[in-house]
Amino acid sequence: MDLKEVLQVLEHLAPLSLAESWDNVGLLIEPSKARPIKTILLTNDLTDPVMEEAEAMSCDLIISYHPPLFQPIKRLVQKDWKQRLAVRAVEAGIAVFSPHTSWDSVKGGVNDWLVGGLGSGQVSVLSQALASASHSHKVEFTVRSLEELNTIMEELKAADRGAPLQHSVRFSDSSSLHVSVTCSDSALTPSVQTLLRHPAASKSINILQLQKPPLPGHGQGRLSVLDQPLTVGTAIQKMKSHLVLSHLRLALGVGQTLESTVSTAAVCAGSGASVLNGVRADLYVTGEMSHHEVLDAVAKGTNVILSDHSNSERGFLTVFRERLAVRLPESVTVALSRADRDPLEVV
Image (tube, rainbow, N blue to C red; front, side):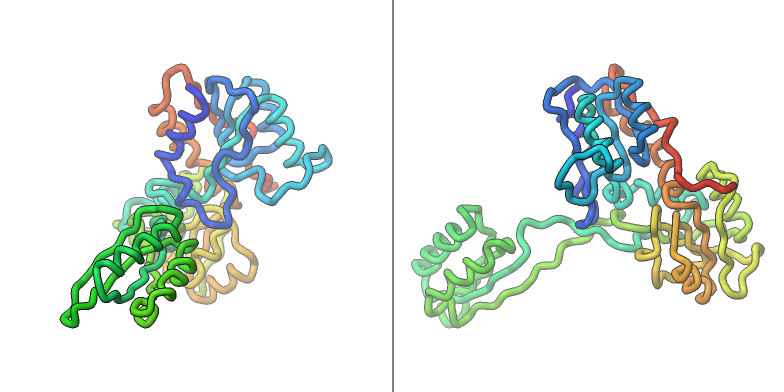
């Protein structure tokens, strides 16, 4: 199986279009010499120990949940640990792919897995993902005849580099024609300039911005109304079991105890404060929050469970491994990194 085919499977499982605009996802390192993909290594973070592990197993593709290359790079030198890893991957002919927030957003992804640790419930998305749309604006105008309309439509098509135009025409009582055309961001300005050259159209231009439709079930963070409410103490034990951790950090909300009831829980894998902020829930579960963000939540009576950043994400790799393996030939091995771990530990 070649790299392109594996990338198609990964795209099917979690479209990269679901990732946040600031993220750096997808194929980050592509070897110059193509080779069959026989061994894939899953890791939460690409570190020196993980790279050594990948080299030892003659890995062909590393899927690193966090992108090892994030900021723009002007040089590849040995003194920077991420650049050093990139060079090693290139030298070893190992491709590197990162899904990051596309896995967070996709239905059935990291956040659905995380909230599932508390039990079943009515789950909704906190920050709704929107569908990508090729057309972002609707331009409305009026013309006096079909001949004028045909002329304008040809000019508008040329302004949008020959792309097919979606348009509708409605006849009015005054024998004029009301026209509605959708166009992309890049075509908006030349389209308006085209209409301004036609007297009737120029006097009737109306521009509307189109809203992107929501993608149900996809987006950042999850809120669960639990089918079976539980106590704070029980929630802690369930999350320890789910995340396979012996310790978690807990901040009790004002007026709360370990016996207080949790009926609603909001979760966001990783660093979740920006998604959880302002959400009304009995419990927040995330990897990390700042001191003051925790204080804000506690003051509102919300309990907070923190696992440390990557501990809130890593367990999903086991789930994803099974999903990926069944879609690949038996000749492809999908392995979980044994060297990958959160850099923080309780001592």
